[in-house]
Length: 161
Ligand code: CYC
Image (cartoon, rainbow, N blue to C red; front, side):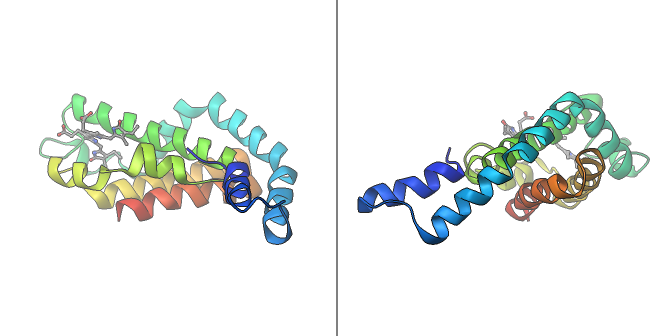
């Protein structure tokens, strides 16, 4: 896993140089937004289960997907879906904290699309659920932090699409 700090320092170290210019500016912005990131992570962590249930209610419930023949039926698959949404939220929160998406590549997206395709987990409703999650999270953490979380939830959407 990488983060904004190591992503700036590693290449500078390779060149044996100090940080300067754009790289330093990026770090400055990162530190300035630090309190915002930590506050959002705290809010999300304190209410993750209601974020997931609201996301599911908004995007997946009351359709065919939870009925016999749907991919969220029976309960075992319904639970797998809630678990997956929990993974997406938790790892997007880690990525938002570090302002770096590499943890998503390494721990979430690596092979996920192929796994979904081979198990018949439908991509479109999954993307719809992550889109609903963006709205729910935005309402909980506010516009600025919501924008940060959107970057990483969108990153998961692109990785699945
Ligand atoms: C299954 N989701 C899976 C599987 C994996 C993941 C590996 C197959 C193994 C299993 O059932 O546990 C995902 N595992 C992960 C991820 C990580 C991991 C991301 C990283 C930490 O370790 N079905 C739907 C919904 C959607 C859904 C739209 C929820 C958004 O219709 C999810 N994922 C879903 C379902 C299964 C699954 C239903 C079970 C499929 C099956 O066994 O038939």
